[in-house]
Amino acid sequence: MRVLAVAVLLVACKSSAPQPSEPHGGAPPAGLHNAEPPPAIDAGVVDAPPTEIRARIIQLEVVGSSGTYVVVSAGSDDGVAKSWKGCLLDALLNCRPDSDLVLVRIQKQRTILQTKFSPSQIQQVTGVRLRAP
Image (tube, rainbow, N blue to C red; front, side, top):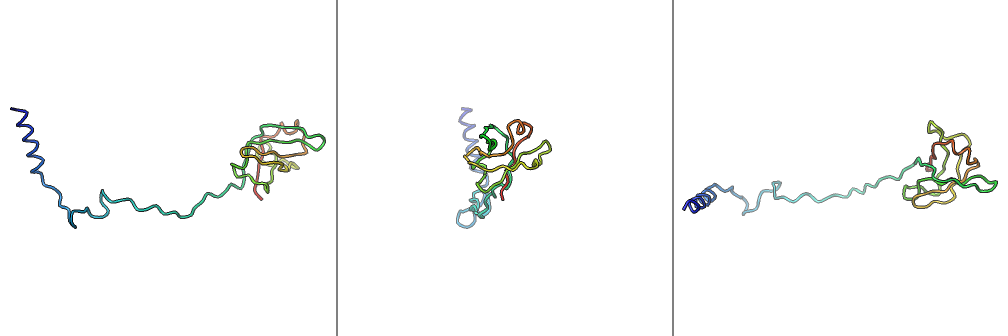
């Protein structure tokens, strides 16, 4: 008997509570809980490609008397392009004098550059800077 009385009391409380009125034919006013978010606007903003990248040296290969190939950890996936220039970095992250690098090949995640420095001279550098023209 008690269970039936509690159920009747709950139903009576729910039905006797005042319901919020819905103006405008039952639709909630604009800007409230049920409103849809505004449509996304595409402003055409695109991330600018990088103009400079510092990369670490991952491999060296002697190329006869013409110098050394330097393989670095940045490639076309990072924005490197054939027109870019490179240099070897000193301990203060400045380009070493006469350390210009020539781009030989660009892969997705690596770039191969050529320098006149020997591998023993390259061991002293901290990395490579690649820069857009």
